[in-house]
Length: 264
Image (tube, rainbow, N blue to C red; front, top):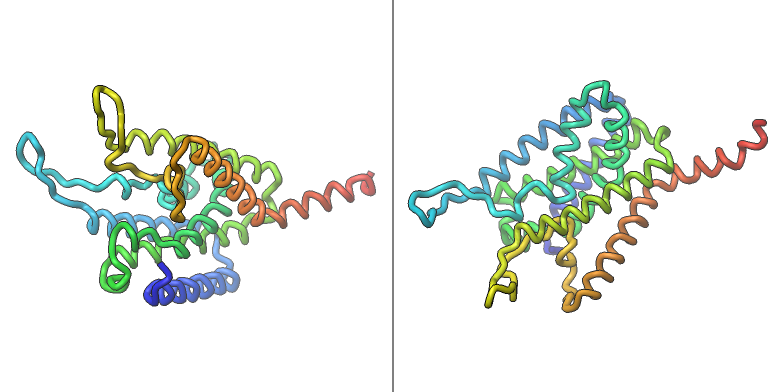
């Protein structure tokens, strides 16, 4: 993180984001057109990831099988957006309300989640060394996929920012809390516990979906209350950052409320 290779990738991603947003503002494509591109990028991204990380391992009972390590499962905030992208693009008209709610959720989480991933690329600490940032397909997959998510989040705002409401902010935060709670269970399910006398004494390996287990910065959580405090801070930052992107919505709602008596 923050190596010369990282800064070069950040410059490339910033240029791509700026160029694509200029084209979107100029050409004014329908949101479904942008979603079509997002679907294509997502499929290509997952294909590259699977081909890059899959391993052929021995089975204790004999033979070999392909295996993908658990941390590569699409359950991170950014990778789970692929499921949402597919839904909002192909959802039937009867699910328009759910589609609108998901788009309201995707607007801030695509921008914030992908921007955080670009600034703090976990790929350099878990998958490949920084010096291989331009010779391994996984680096291209990581940076270009998250660049697409930032562009998609802004495109959603451009298309329907004037329709977002304060209720959408509340629903978005509620969904983030729900996903965080689910991730706590999943992180335990995917952990490899070590037992002694029938009791769990340590963990050999665990996932960290939504960063609900291990902070993205080197902070030791040695007691239960440390972890609970960390979760509280995480949720507070989540609420604050999402609110930051919803400021135009709050201002619009405040002006509408302020002007309401004059309209009667």
